[in-house]
Length: 110
Image (cartoon, rainbow, N blue to C red; front, side):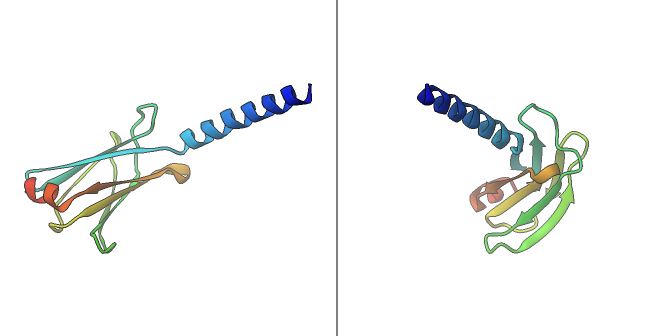
């Protein structure tokens, strides 16, 4: 009987932990075209990240620029430097993710 109770408690904890982890997920996608970087940010349910803070870093972790997503979760900017770029999205309640664009991708999109 104790074993069943322990298994039940363990199963409940696993389910709750998985839900919590999913709740803090945010998706970020970026690509380069015509000398501009385009980003799209959204939550797992498809809701756009509105007014999310976007930070762009070079390969030495120097902040190159920052901005804010629009109502559709979009943000774009001119390529600030031909380098490996790390783009970070900071959304509400601790939601955060990053996307890396390789230097070769940045060069190809210029």
